Length: 585
Image (cartoon, rainbow, N blue to C red; front, side, top):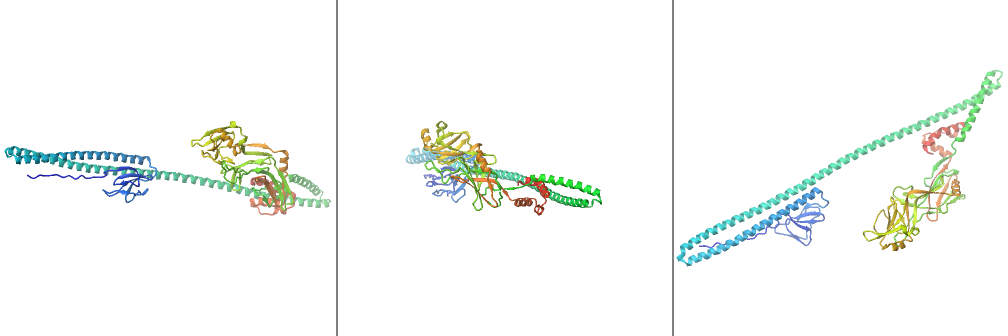
C-alpha cells in the first residue's frame, strides 16, 4: 500500500486594500496599496507586487511612476472630505475582512495538521495489519474505514481551500469595487463643485457687467448735462455781447442827439420846437450818464488766482493777499526704537515772508509760540503736500483762528494715575495711557515707538479706542519700571474733532496786510524746524483776468479794452458778473 503525503505552501497575498501608513517617511519601505500623506495631499503606492520602494517621495499634486494621487494638496470641500473619510472607513472594513480570511486560513492549517496526524495513524495501522495476519480481516476493515476517513478529510480540506480562494477573490473584488465606487463619488463631487463655482462666477460677472453698464449710462447722462450747461453759459455770453453792442449804439445815438440839439439851438429861429425837444433829450442823457457813473463803483477792479501751494508767482499784481491758509508738516528721519529715539520735526514759530523779484522789498510776519503739527496718512487728510496727504494743524488768516487737528502728548506730563500696566498673551508688557480725544482711525507717531494699528509686538504704539494710547515693550515687567522708561517719550496723534484758538489782533492785522508785487512775488513759510505750507489767493492784472474770462466764455473780441466809454465798461462788468461767479474767478 502506497503512502500519500500532502505538502502545502504558504503564500503572502500582501495588501489587498488601501493600507494607511500616515505621513510619508523617507526612510520607510512601502509596498503596493500603502497610502501616505505628503505636503497636504494623499497618495497610494504603485510598487510592483512583492516589491517595496524606499526614499522615493510622491510628486506633490501629481501622479508619478511609483505613487498615485488620491487627494490633491489644498483645502478640501466638505463633500470631498466626507468621501475621503468614507474611503478610509471602507478600507478599515476590508482590513476586518482580511483578518477574517486570515482566521479561516488558520483554521484550515489546523485541519491540515489533523489530516497529517490521521495519515500517520493510518500508516501505523497498516504496519500493524501487515505484522498480524491473524487479525487481517479486522485490520483490513479498519484500514478501509481509515482510508474512507482520509478520503473524506482530504475532500473537506480541498473544499475549504477552494472556499478560501473564493472568499479571498470575492474580498479582493469587493475591495476594488468599493475603491472604484468611492473614487468615482469623489470625482463626481469635485466636478459638481467645480460646475457650481463656474456658475457662481458667471452670475456674479453678469451682475458686475450690468452694474458697469448702468454706471457708464449715468456718466453719459452727467456729461450731457454738463455740455448743456456749457452751451447755456455760451448763449448767455453771446447775449451779453449783443447787449454791449446795443449800449454802444445807444451811446452813439445820444451823441448824435446832442449834436442835433446844438444844431437846433443855432437854428432856434427856424424851429423853436426842435430846440425844446433837444434840450429835453440832453437832460435825459445827463441823467443816464450819472446813473452809469454810480454803477462804476460796482465794477471789477481785481482778479484773483490761487497759488495752489506754489511759492514763486510770476503773474502777480500789486494788491492784498486773500484767504491765506498756513499748514503744518512732519518729518522723522530714521526708524525709532525704545533704545534709540528719532526726533519728530514740525513747523515751529512759522515766519511768513513776501519778497519782490529782486529781493529788495520784504514783508515778514512771525507767529510766535505757535507749533503746527501734522501726521502723514493714506486717506482722510485735510491737505495734500506734494503727493502726501496730511492731517495737519492750520491757520485760517481770514477767520483769524488756529485750528488743531492733531495733538502732541509728552508722557512725562501725564499723571501716573492715567497709566495702567498689563501683559499681552506673549508675555510682552504694555502701558496704556488714558485720553479722551484720540482718533483710532489713524496711526499715532512717536519719537521712540513705531506706529501700528494694533499689535502685541515690543517697540510699537497703537490706539485701540478713542480713550487710550498703548505702548508695548518687553522691558515693561511692572508698572513702576514701565512709567520710568517712557519719561522721555512723546507721541503725536489725530484728534477725534478739531479744536480752535484765536489769533491775537496784532497777528491777524499783520497777516492781512501782506501784499503781492508786480509782476513777480516769492512767498515762503519758514520755521525753526521745518518749513510750512501755504495756500492763498493773490491778485493778477486786469488784462490777464479778462483774458481768462474771455477764454472761458469763448469770446475773442477786443472791444473790452478798445472801447474807452465808461458806460460801456460798467455795463460789461455788470453783465459779466454772473459768468464770473459761475467760473469762480
